[in-house]
Length: 189
Image 1: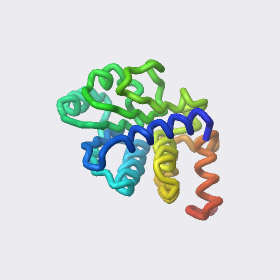
Image 2: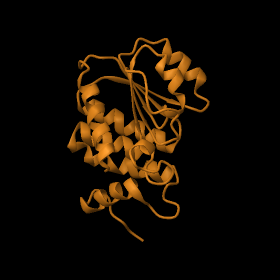
Image 3: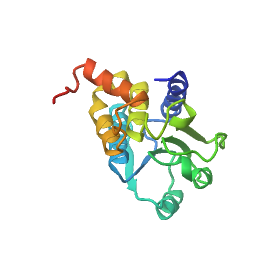
């Protein structure tokens, strides 16, 4: 984990912990293997932390889905494997938001109520070294180190995002190595 990534994860955890346990937390994730894995990790982590949530998977283009969400009364929205490309829409929503994404970001400086964790802003190449699921896994461990048993879902996400092609590198490699060293998964040929 890079220092920048660790720092932004800690800040996101502060935002989550600032919410009362009865808050309306919305989890919005991309409807692909990476996004589904990221959503599973976040939902499990929030549940373990005692929060209720409502999760939705969205297909691209996200316009119609985000228009529906913008009409809801959410206190916190967590966007996974998406969001950095939808910053302008998210900033107009009347809710605190956390974005966890590895896709290209539109801008670095955001409105005060939107917090962005983007691999490319954390010295992690979002195309090859960190996907939505592995980044969400890092956030879940910052929320509670006991969430380290969610690592198989992160591995599923990086495989589904095809970030294994050419070998597993960068942050993804550190997630895989941790899982192998802790005997959470095993490697077989």
